[in-house]
Image 1 (cartoon, rainbow, N blue to C red):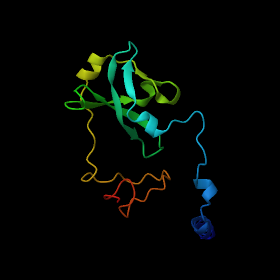
Image 2: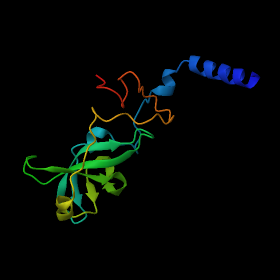
Image 3: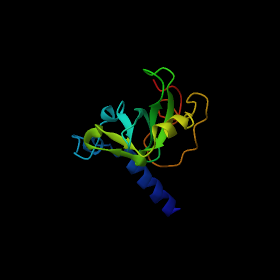
Image 4: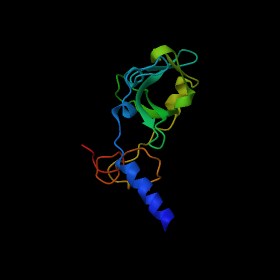
Length: 150
């Protein structure tokens, strides 16, 4: 019984501990970090300098915040008739500030690839809580897994 009370006391004190701004805020970008703005819209070429497409979206893991894939718009003309494929983030070779993005995939292979299938945000049930500590609220509709958010 004492052990349960001690655990409850610790949990209560942790819950009551305010989060300090210095623990949440990031003050500046380091030289090894990319801005999403630089990556989104970046032109993707093959290692043989063939134009493949441009990065339209990023797929991010809710569990650890890592980028899983880049969604690349392929084919079409001026965006009309293009399809979106996803490529493993680790397969992209980026130079400084994503000015050049290369992929070991030919234009033909990219055009033949299956279109990426996004999940439906509104109608799929949220996954079970995993206790990963993402800090996202899943019960009020304001987190990433529930409701419309805004």
